[in-house]
Amino acid sequence: MRSSHIEMVEPNQSQCVLVVDDDPRICRLLSRFLAAEGYAVELASNGRTMTHLMNAKSIDLVILDLRLPGGEDGLSLARQIRAESDVPLIMLTGRSESVDKVVGLEIGADDYVTKPFDRRELLARIRSVLRRSSSKKAQTASTDGTVSVLHFSGWALDLSRHELISPEGQKVELTSYEFQLLAALAHQPAQVLSRDQILELIADRDWQPFDRSIDVLVGKLRRKLRDDPKNPNLIKTIRGVGYMFTPALTQG
Image 1 (cartoon, one colour):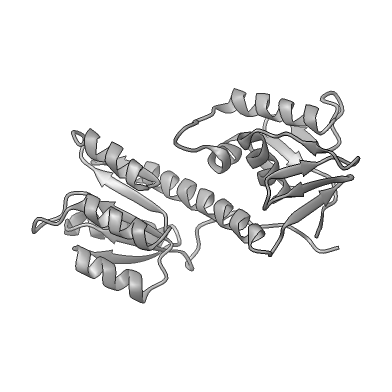
Image 2 (cartoon, helix red, strand yellow):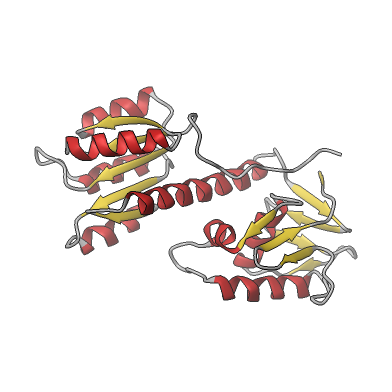
């Protein structure tokens, strides 16, 4: 049986972060810190260099300072990035730039970090954004024909149509978040996903769930899958850790 396992993104040298900032101190700090965490790092002090590097290199994530010299508008550069690419984008903003934060998120930035920033917080946000991006790419790949339907215990999860079909051939209505949760679990079969990992995979700007809401969502999904909450066979609770999707999977 072919496995439908799709690895979650972890930092490694193949992932390249482009830092766009005119402050050489921040560039040096981020370059050393991110390199030590296993990332390749490219640096740009202006929009022209940024564009050149994005055309010449395979960039996995951009960290963009919204305050660049020479009259360059970071928001305009963010618009340019988003118009040409779906590369994950984290903005660096000042404490008083609340309007820019809102506009940047509306443009399509994935997150923002306020300066001065804590390096560990920035690293956590980078990892979170990359994991969400990886999950979206995996689901997009499934709609492009790589994996279209996952079969388990008589059920069929149609990733392209966002549909769950029962063993009797009936369509089971899922909310958007129930589908995202089931898809996230099914993409990591026989692996324990912590609540934090699930939060990162299914949260978005309109809904920021917390640990308890994940438990409630799992309960609703179990009911629709007829999975006995007292003795579940499909979505196992790993006490103190999270959840694991246990049935055998086939693709087709």
